[in-house]
Length: 125
Image (cartoon, rainbow, N blue to C red; front, side, top):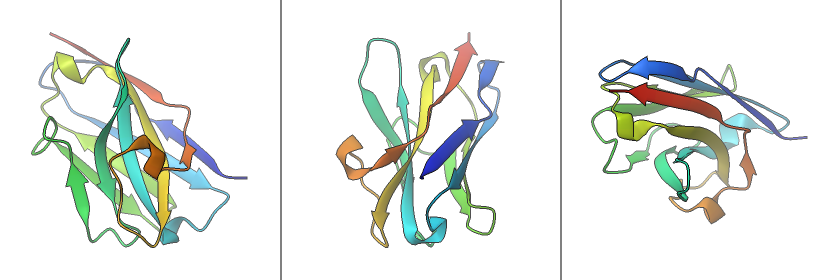
């Protein structure tokens, strides 16, 4: 079955960097768009970044544009989220998700069919 396992979260200080990983199994990874979302306590799950199956097209939420970079290694079946210049407001649980087959990534949670369990990121000031 489809499985997504996120890792790389932790407690960091403002200005630090983290790289999240999302190891995928149970489907043909290279054929699907991937996305990253985050959910802060008491808030909705928000789109952060998305990438097409080939990796040739990416998109970001305004709140992270210029600081975060999504990437993928189809040979390793892994998606990544490089997060630089972290801010306290980036504190949240981060989720990776599987999007559409050979399609553009979406920015709504309904555009994604499978989700990981999440990895927590805490940024202190």
